[in-house]
Length: 223
Image (cartoon, rainbow, N blue to C red; front, side, top):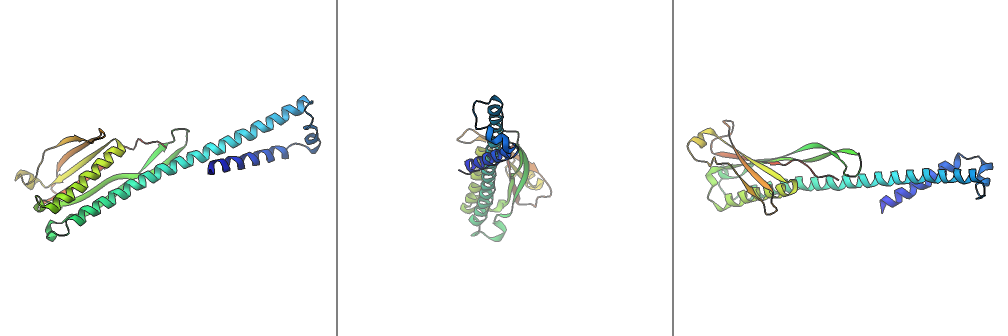
């Protein structure tokens, strides 16, 4: 509804502007449809007004499309924050050393081009979501619930973006001792999108801890 109001406003402004440029003597003559020059001037003014109105409407519609896309990206970030919070809550009943910790949600700025115009805007979108899980909690229901929250989030991100990657950082000592699973691989969501699992040995990761970072796929949506 707003689009049409903006278009009508632009049309009114354009018409008033055009009329203001015509001398008063000519305004009276333009009522005479038998005067070719007058008819041509009137048609030109109406054409200009219509172009301005269409331009204003297209601009308003483009702005609205970007707002919708940004809201979708905001919802994605909120979902990541809530999911990680749920994962932490799931392990609250475990000993402190076995609880999920150090959650982080990072965003990035992406330049997006409108699908119906040359308009380009910066969109703030989810980049990564990470959480640390102590391996001592494995095989416990609380740990499983936390991991399920992480996996479900990765699946939703993959379906939203067309793909996602889970990077699992592990301490090299845990890897050599085979206290953690170092296997990599891919799984498909029900919608046919790929979730890739990568493992990375990093001595900066404390022993007994695995850091799971979900990397969102490239933003390919267009408003």
